[in-house]
Length: 90
Image (tube, rainbow, N blue to C red):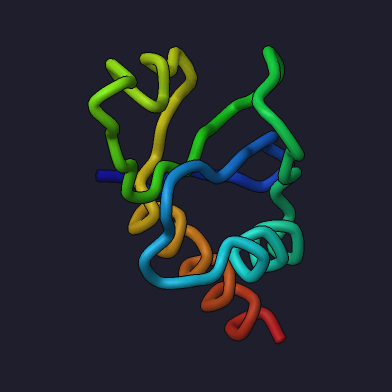
């Protein structure tokens, strides 16, 4: 699967991230050029989906998102790619 380009894309994080604290993921995304949004909105390009816990009362805690979703792993692959390309260009 090709790495999704998130530079200048509006993204938001949802669910529990396994590798990073949410604030660190947001800071990394911003540093690498993504536009982290504070809440769900119609102009989102991607939702970075961590682990989602369902409850017995909710059919789905994401309410069947219609946004383009990427996994935490795909986000981290993009971040690693961007950091590697920066180190080669420095």
